[in-house]
Length: 392
Image (cartoon, rainbow, N blue to C red; front, side, top):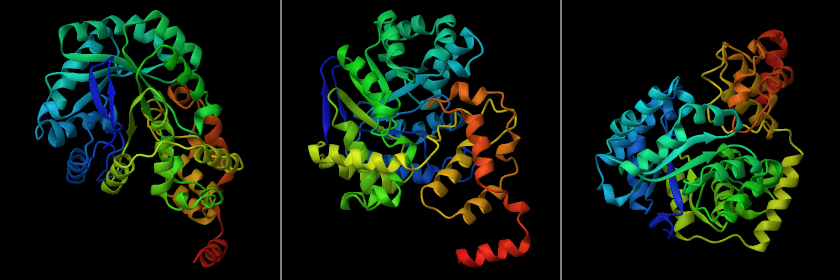
């Protein structure tokens, strides 16, 4: 396993980290984590040299922390791994409720302390609440208490906001940034990376495969190189892009299967840094991706809680993207017809867009989706039969 020594923090971390955000499930309910499959994944990760595990208060409806107690902290020696968690201020209604969160997290995780503790999702939309609740001072107190070894924050915004945050809060020791080759220029990832490097801060990478989007390249992009022939090769390519950046201490992968764990271990056990040829290939892949109008959703699910219509936004976007990525319209229509709450139920309140880390205009995209995928329920029976015959 490729290991990275970070002198400023006194730690040595595996270059690939285990993100407990997209664990296998037994149902569509995010809280229904498949414990048996997750245990096999954690065991394989530990055996393969992975020593960084990341969770958060809100992941899997709070069950992500609990499953790590079952699969990790109750089974392995505490000194064999680093445990990272996050203060999700946006899930609190008051400063007292925010402070109570930390004790709940320790209990859920079965831990006495966290190696890394992050203020969750800093950005313009959430900064004022975090400041009003005293989150920044609270983070420092937690470190002073010894219950947190190192403090940092995950970040979703532009470079100027990162500069503002670091100027006003120099106590933070590291940052967690969304870095991938799709967002490098399009969403300013290159600029926020530059700011972090100028400050000399160690970087933890999130969304290196853009929520799986960079492991589902359209055929035209996949055919550009033999190494992109399958999803495993596409994922490895995206992971290598961010892992090759200077200052990166670990790259989080939100793994959902044992195959993804073993694939990532193989990639980082025989790690090959990005070459000039790889960089040129990225440019060619991006040219192909620009030809397709995909919705840049990573299925984080932050948009779900505040939706008054209870629209399953990530799943609807996934259906749309699978179709636009080369799939047939007929299966997309069938899948869309299976939703009790469709995209046209959106009331355009904008609550979803305010919390979207990808800055997606979700109401507008839902409207586009509903228009682009004709409602299968309204298609005449004889037309359905003809479509089904063609698809078969």
